[in-house]
Length: 82
Image 1 (cartoon, rainbow, N blue to C red):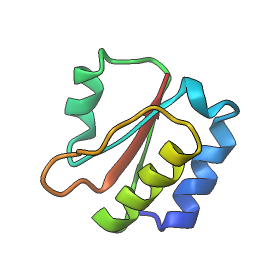
Image 2: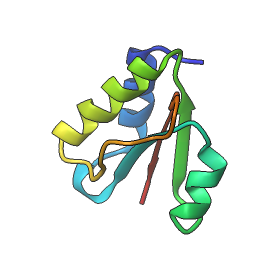
Image 3: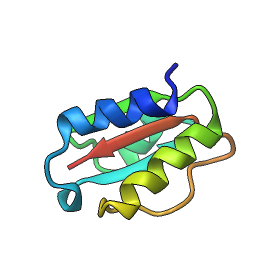
Image 4: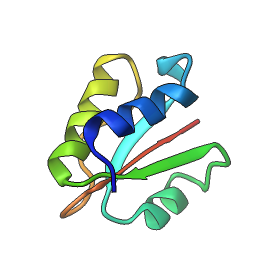
């Protein structure tokens, strides 16, 4: 499990152009990956808390990533994909 700064740094290592990526949060990353069509370029991180996951998602949506609120009952996974 990771804190907010660790997840943000992990995403920043992968992403160059925010606008082409989609970000989301979930309580079941395997299910969400399948629901998104099983994208090959998928990355995920487990946050220490739901609040951290929501904060990271909001951070990157403000920077231009595609995404929307949601995530299930207790979303503590952050994911991105192309």
